[in-house]
Structure formats: C-alpha cells, structure tokens
Length: 171
Image (cartoon, rainbow, N blue to C red; front, side, top):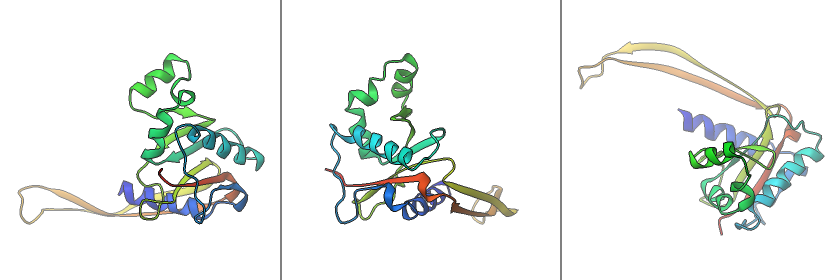
C-alpha cells in the first residue's frame, strides 16, 4: 500500500509543478555528475526562494542513483557536525542544501530515464487517507486469522509554486 500511495503522490506533484520552477525538460534532461549533483539541489532551493516559498519545511525526494552521486561529494557528506555524521553512518539521508532529503524508488520516471527529482514544502499539497470496511476472516488454506479492509486516499496540489522539479537522467 505504501508504494502505491507514494507513487501516486509523487506523480501528482511532478505533473503540477509551476513552469518557472522546472530545471531540465523531458526533451533535454540534465545528466548530473558527482561534481554537480549537489549544485542542482542548491538550484532547486533557489527556484523555491525566487517563488517566495517559505523556507521552513522544505524537502526533496531523490532516486537512489542521485543519492549515490551526492555521497561522493564532500559538500553533502562533510557537513562537519557529529550529528550529521551519525545520520550518514546510520543510513539516513539527512538534511542538505536547505532540504530534508528523502530517497525513494518511486521518483517518477519513464523506463528508467527522465527522473523527476521533486522539491517542495509542506505548503505544496494536502493528503488524506482512511481505512474503510475492515473485516476479519479465515484464509482458506491456513489455520489463521486475517483482516482485510479498503484503503482510500487522495491528494491535491494547493500551491504549484511550492514545487520545483529537476528532470534528469543517469549518466
């Protein structure tokens, strides 16, 4: 369920980005390297600041390959505090370039290309979910109990200016 909802929300955000907040296009995607991947995070942050988006609550969702590029950059991993070092050693992504950084395999892409690195703030969208109609039952081929239910969810982009997207490809 988590992957389905995550992919739904990511696609919704990616298609509702304000045109002024886009870096790269589907026709000409950016190909980041370890030397400039961090710079593109800074550029996304700058796009949001130029759109007068509040700085609190900013986040960015990146694919695994992009995280790998960032881990090769001292500006990302060498941020100097013991707390940040512990986060990186513990496998969490942490904070960088003004964002809370998340890694997801659900970053929208087309056949492993044209990844949409999505940056935004908590003011960009709204999400609601509810579990309806739960029911206990006995599975046919097991001596056990189970529960099934209907998960309903929805989301809406409230302010497209609060979203910035980098369209990129793997090198």
